[in-house]
Length: 182
Image (cartoon, rainbow, N blue to C red; front, top):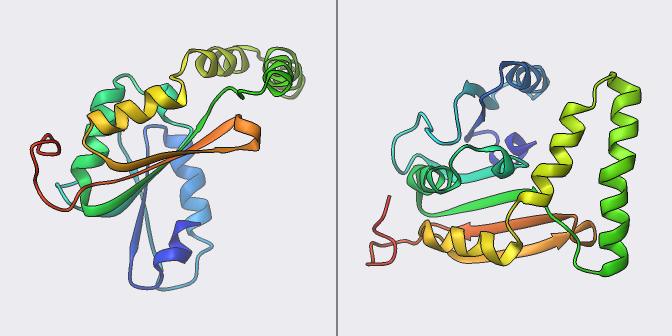
């Protein structure tokens, strides 16, 4: 949990548009030691309820495929970061190696759909998962979007054979022509 990294003086804000997800975050936050500060805030990634330069870090897990406006979401992440602040985004991807790509496609097309249906009795969310991963940007394209949003030192680190990518970036320290955008 992020609270461990900033305890006991820092504050972690868990933001999500979904009330049930925030309830889960609150349940986890209730288990942190006394004196640690964790807050749950209902908000959209495209319109963060924080002042400019509020956070030292913005961390996002499997969100970017689901936002309505990726450019606005990245701009908001940059806006709320302090100069020198770090961005870390985990997102699903498609492996590059042919055998892994084939197995990944089979797992998403059959495995998750079957297991999801058996566990929940619904298929829609698991079909959406497959489509949203297939339709999301390639790592090079997402890195370009991070640069366009004004992030520096951007990188993409493949995890799990490339099925997940860790994207990182930094809000530059000073104002330069390339990072004056919000």
